[in-house]
Each structure stands twice: as structure tokens, then as C-alpha cells.
Length: 231
Ligand SMILES: *[C@@H]1O[C@H](CO)[C@@H](O)[C@H](O)[C@H]1NC(C)=O
Ligand SMILES: *[C@@H]1O[C@H](CO)[C@@H](O)[C@H](O)[C@H]1NC(C)=O
Ligand SMILES: *[C@@H]1O[C@H](CO)[C@@H](O)[C@H](O)[C@H]1NC(C)=O
Image (cartoon, rainbow, N blue to C red):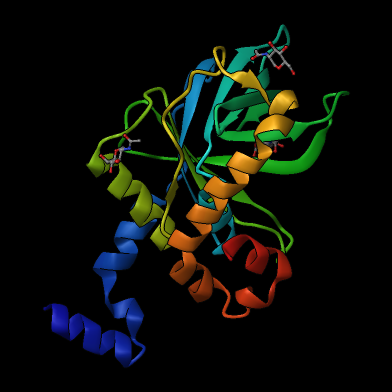
């Protein structure tokens, strides 16, 4: 059966191979219930249409990222405080968001939509948000993000996310770190003293992912910054 399906794909009658496309259709359905957005969400994994984005996350030591969402007085308006922790340092930034039609919309300080949005997809994970970043502009980044109330998800939940990303033609997911002690870490503002040590750590990481970097961009080693960091 599998061989037959492969043969049919090769003959480019891929629509005959219903199972795969049906599975994707189901996996890429929009979320139909409105989740309670308020509270802490841990950023578990990221997949993108561009191999650079996951590699950059990896090269930058896979930071820990979380989002604290609080409802504002006006219905459907929220504040998202995004926290990032990298190399023991953390920083945060707040952004207002508007939620409607299973979509998180970025809004400006006057509550006007900026045009950027995140569409919630259905997921078998009971406490996760799977969001698709989509832009009308062909050149912009397309990505799929997995957030959870938990600091990590099960292997099956991760597999489902990976399949969703595959269905969209995106990269294999890059995991973030699950060490979220933002309150107890040093402020990113004071990172200067530790930059040399951090560069050494990034260098090690780049050397480890050298093959992936080359696969992503065969010209990578002609980039002076990358060459400097990798030598
Ligand atoms: C956000 O970062 C600022 C420093 O830039 C810090 O004073 C504040 O406590 C942080 N807020 C949260 C909610 O982590
Ligand atoms: C949500 O969907 C309704 C009905 O299709 C539409 O009128 C409305 O403009 C949508 N909201 C946003 C913010 O796109
Ligand atoms: C999270 O869970 C996945 C799948 O179970 C596992 O492969 C990964 O190592 C875990 N990550 C952390 C940081 O615990």
C-alpha cells in the first residue's frame, strides 16, 4: 500500500493519496473553541519557512521564552508580557493584543490592528496553543509556534506539532529551553561583563550545528561574522 502510494506520488497524481492530505487537513483546522488566554504560557518549540530562524534560536543558546497574558478592562483586549532568558540573563517586553475569530492580533497603543496576527490551530494537547504566524507578503516569515501551560510537552504532543509543521512545509521544530526562572535571573541590561563568556558558548554551539548551517546556506562560511565566531 505504501509503495503504491509512493508510486502514485511519483506519477504526480498525489491527490489520489488521500490519507496524508486528509490527515493534514484535519491537523491544520482552526481551533474552534476559545481558550482562556490569561496566565503563563511557555514557549516550547518553533518551526518556520526559513531554515535560518530555528538555527538562529539554536545558535543563540536556545533561550527560554514565556508569555504572561492579562486581560484588560475592554473585552477581547489583553496585554502580553514576553520574557526571554538567555545565558542566565532575562528581559521582558509588553505588547497589547486583541483576540477575535481564534486569532491574536497585534495592536498599537491606540488599539488599532497593525496587520500582524497569529491564528490558533486545533491541537490534541489539552493545555497548548499552536499558533500560525502568517503574512500576506510572500517574503515575510511564516512560522508555527507551540506554547503550553506546562514547561514541556509529551513526545506525542511534540510529534503532532512536528507533523503540523511538516504539513505546512515548515522546518523541523527547534525547541526552546524549559528553565524559566525569570525573576531570579540577572537583567539583560547588565550583560556586558559576561559577553566574552557568552560568545564562547555561542561559538561552541555554532561549531556543533555546522552541518545544519551548511545545509541551510552553503555560502554561510563566506560570512565574516560566522567565520570569526567559528574559528
Ligand atoms: C521587566 O523588566 C524590567 C526591567 O527592564 C523589570 O524591572 C521588571 O520587573 C520586569 N517585569 C516583569 C513582569 O518581569
Ligand atoms: C471576525 O470575523 C467576522 C465574521 O467573519 C468579521 O466580520 C470580523 O471582521 C473578523 N474580525 C477581525 C478582527 O478580522
Ligand atoms: C521535552 O520533551 C521532549 C519530548 O518528550 C523531549 O525530547 C525533550 O528533551 C524535553 N525537553 C526538556 C527541556 O525537558
